[in-house]
Image (cartoon, rainbow, N blue to C red; front, side, top):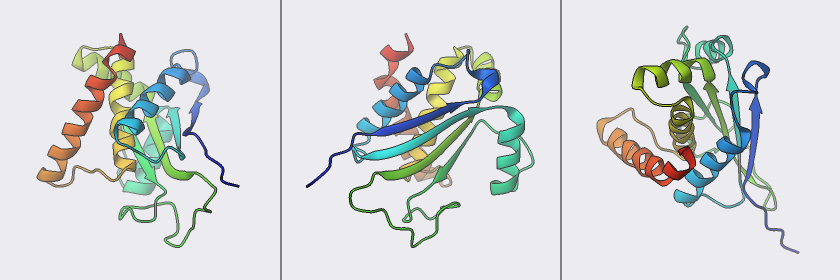
Length: 166
């Protein structure tokens, strides 16, 4: 018997931000981004909306930067060279979803950046989520050529989800 799984997107919005963020909105953005990137339909992804202190702690622990940031991505795929959280030999059973990883977003940082850019917090959250998901799919911006490719994919995704933002 073959089981077909649908994309599973798990969302945690920390208590201070529960009334400010729609989990359904985040799920739609992540889902559309994964579909646009032709991700495995049985993929699984976690999203966490948190505050400055928690993201600062994570940034310090995993990137050795003692400062808050807007978004962090934690890869779970073994072929990702920047994998910080999963052992290289951790197998995915054939009937299980491929867990891409976790995207952690700082709501206060998104709010600050939205104000500075002159757009809505939802617009900024969408941008940060797309950015984080693209990292989980293997895109990065450490080199100029890779940055251009990632930016192109971000721009396409933002255009694709424009109606969700309105």
